[in-house]
Length: 215
Image 1 (cartoon, rainbow, N blue to C red):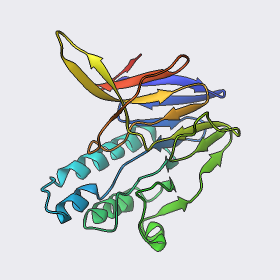
Image 2 (image 1 turned 90 degrees about the horizontal axis):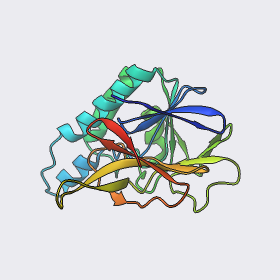
Image 3 (image 1 turned 180 degrees about the vertical axis):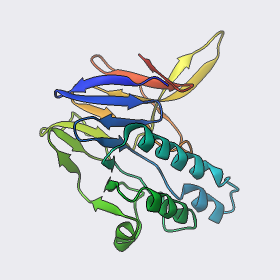
C-alpha cells in the first residue's frame, strides 16, 4: 500500500490510502470524520445498517496505529455522529486497548455527546480549533487558509470523479490540498462524497483500490 510523502512548512507528512495523514515530527496521526455511532443512529431509526461497518473503521484505525506507532491522534471533527448509542461501546473497547495514545478531538457539528462523556472515553475535546507549531486544526475548512499557519480540516468528505473506459464514471475519496490548507477524506467508509474540482495550485490525491493517485 503506497504512502505519499509531502513537505509542508518544512514538516514531513505521510498520506496514507487508509484515509489519514501522519506528521512525523510530532508522531501524530491526523484524521477526520469517523462518525462513530452513525450505524447505531440509523438502526434506531429502523434502517438496518450492518454493525460491521464501524468494526471495519476501527480495525483500519488500529492498523494505522500499528503502522505508524503515533504518540497522539488528532481528529479534526465529527469523531462521533450523534447522541450516545450501543456503538459507542465498541469505541470504548478499542480505546481500552489503545490506552497509551493521546486523542485530541476538535469539535465538529456532529460531536454532540455530553461533555463528560468525552473524558470517560479518553478523548480531549477542543471547542474552537487547535494549534500545534505551524499547523492549525479546524473542523470546517477556512476560505483562504489560516493566518497563523497551515490548516487541516474535514467536514466536506471530499471526493473526485474519474472517467473510466467508455462512459464509466467512478467516484473516489481524496485528500484535497493547497499551499495553505488540506481537507482530509472522511475516515469512515459509511459516508457520502462531495465532489471537488481542484483549482490552479491545488492538488488532489485520490484513494483508488488501496493506492493514492495524484491529479
